[in-house]
Image 1 (tube, rainbow, N blue to C red):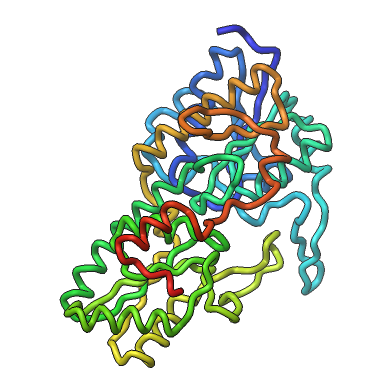
Image 2: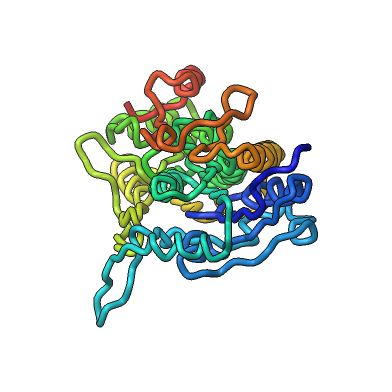
Amino acid sequence: MAKSRVRRIGILTGGGDCPGLNAVIRGVTKPAQDYGMTVYGIIDGFEGLVEGRARELNDTDVSGILARGGTILGSSNKGDPFHWPVEVGKKIEIQDKAEAAIKNYQTWNLDALIAIGGDGTMHICNKLSQMGLNIVGVPKTIDNDLDATDVTFGHDSAVYVVMMALDRLHTTASSHHRVIVCEVMGRYAGWIALHGGIAGGADIILIPEIPFSWQKIYDKIHKRQLMGKKFSLVCVAEGAKAQGEEIVVKETDIKRTDPIQLGGIGALVAKNIEKNTGRETRVTVLGHLQRGGSPTPYDRILSTKFGAFAIELVSHGKFGRMVALKGNEIKNVRIEDAIGKQKLVKPDNQAVFAAKAVGISFGV
């Protein structure tokens, strides 16, 4: 393995946490000495880059973390250097702290930065790259909504949680002859609800990309009742909405780059089902359960591949790039191309077709 001209690299985890982050950190840090590199773990994502918080990582630091969820470095989804909230009196003022981030990058004598994160993190990476920082991105999001990669790590683990939850809800729904609604994450992309719903045997799946009809939901539940099936499972993405209606917003937080926090569609769906079908209905919101815990074997392998390939790109001076899964191979794409558009579920997607084939309703 040839020595690299790059000697000091930083690594950070931005945005929401998910299973597999530690596997990437391990995949970068373990081979670092073979490349003649020193790795600095930046604490709490871009917050640490702006505030100057980092520590050196070595082989001992990353030993045994493959199976651990979350991130040993900490993360933050409120640390956008270009959208930095500062309390001024009793108000929150948004400031640009990009220069502080660049100054710390230079103070630490970093030759490159590996940033692990989702769509928001990649947007920040693109801006910092244009300002002169040598950056390689690693795509992470349970939502699986980055178009430039076939799959993002963390998604499979989230789907597994949804599947296991639906398996358990299935038995209690059957026992009490209830309708149970399970609200899952995904924001504007329905991949978690789609894949988790199929794997968990949901009877109805509601996703943002396919606005649903209330009456079609009621009809599906009535039809199942006529067939002697006394319960139903509904898997609904937090960004799902009825035809002609808006998404349900839980609250807004101007400290975040995207201030809208979704949540509440599950309760609304449950309320309307009970009111219009007369069936006893309950709702379960999985929330951060989908982000926590140990990564699945698939995510452990993918994360390790991503980390090892990221340091390979750094060693060859290929910056402004993001690692990506294309088929069965790890490739790299330009970060600016990676953030061009979200990867959303198309109504003619093969998974949607398969779900309909086995009788799952999308409320249309």
